[in-house]
Length: 344
Image 1 (cartoon, rainbow, N blue to C red):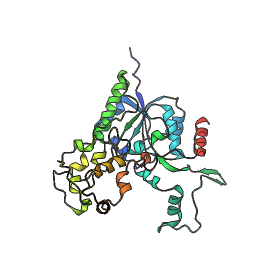
Image 2: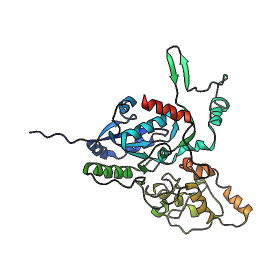
Image 3: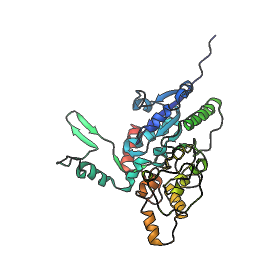
Image 4: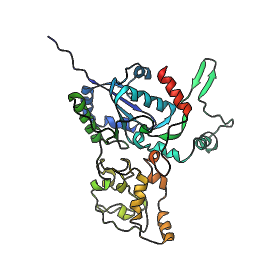
């Protein structure tokens, strides 16, 4: 007598505006990927398997048990996939820094869509475009209509566009944290255990990177910032104490302090620590307490050593930055196009 095989949970993975590092990081769990295969039917993973969007569109709402969505929302197509996968997935996870906080794509929020297009299609020294041809969202040709996604004015995080259940930070998330999250969710899905509170940050710590850093901090006053190539850091001593701009005080723990352990300053990829909504202002506040001067002119000279303040303080979190104004979804026309695709 045979018994009916136990139904496997369904897993989807997708990337929007991102580099693809999060996709590779999933494979960094090594042989544990076999445990993932044993627990899940992978029903959508375009980077690895030849699934089509129409396959997802044909699924019932809530049919996917878990979706790991990495990448920021840059275009109307990104928005469509986010909206579609939100509708199809019981659990939607913002996976990686781009989905959680915007990351490198969101640094574009410091300028405008028009300025970017002018540079790429007209002003760049490498551009040869005498007719100033620009991308068009719709072009009618003899065989039909060609379409391109609408390019948004601002880059958004996943939760600025759709409802998100959980967040897994990191650029990319570390393999041991990915497996810890997947292992916990597998146990929950297979045994009916309660889920973590909605909105929880998974696969990360609840302190700062400094708290897991093996280096010794004496909180010395800083009279000069140096770039890493200008000095040979003293082993075992806090990098910030040595004038190397390290974002450990403004970054959530969970990575194991991998960078600082080998003499490379933290860049902030695990996002702001708990109870801090803005990573940049958190770091600015930390620096304000260690600048070795009360003279405004001398303070300016010290701060001039920070070569790229925006790229330093908001490398990973510009889409959620308070000072820049948190990003918002694109124009209403984009939303109407998405709604039309979802209901067609």
